[in-house]
Amino acid sequence: MTRIALKRVYDAPAADDGYRVLVDRLWPRGVSRAAAALDEWNKDLAPSAALRKWFDHDPSLWKSFCDKYRAELQAGSAAQEFMARLEGRARITLVHAARDREHCHPLVLKAWLEHLHQP
Image (cartoon, rainbow, N blue to C red; front, top):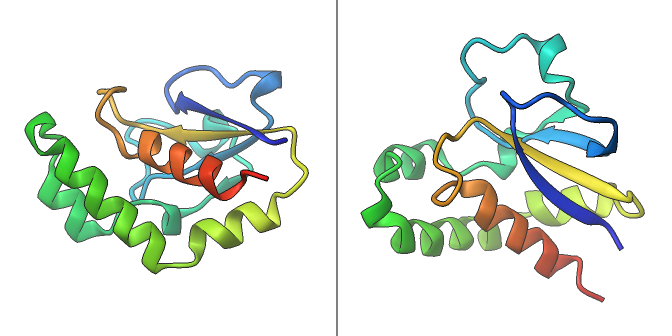
């Protein structure tokens, strides 16, 4: 079974990160493509620009944000296609730039991808 991990892009890449995919719609400030050491940048897995701007990293909106983001994930096919394409990978690391690790979209995305990948 594929293990899915989360990591900030500002943390050093590690050999055990497996397949590293940036899941932010915008490129992180101050990070070169070489330093990011990514296998892929998948903007389609990120929340829509409108949802991202609405949330604006406000923890008081977290529950509503999660509901709206899950609805976006369900309405689209990007998450399903992503998991199908990476079937059999031992580890996938969702790379992001969010400072607040408790209120960031990769938490919702990780749970969604794990749900899709359940046997």
